[in-house]
Length: 101
Image (cartoon, rainbow, N blue to C red; front, side, top):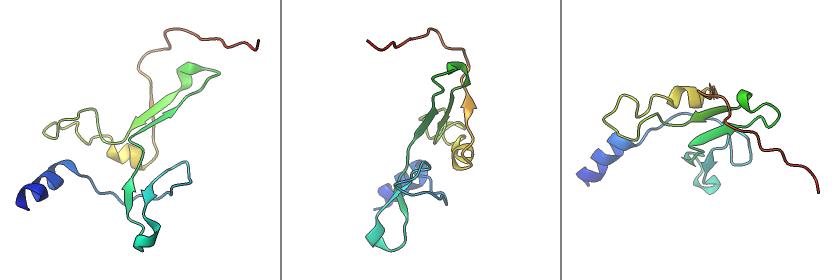
């Protein structure tokens, strides 16, 4: 109904994105649907550099805010789509060293 259409317009974002279910740039779709319209994608990407944690990178799909009225609700979509990532704002707090037994 009209309420569902309004909620869809406020909360949903539609993008032309490449990728597939078996790729690093994962986008899920229903193959037998015929149009390969994506139905899911990872909302958060983390590139963890275990050799140098300060080089680790991140990217969130939508934005800094979960509130649809905020200008930050979907401000990271373009970077996510372009596979750009962000540096962490602070260095690692500690180091976990794993040694074989």
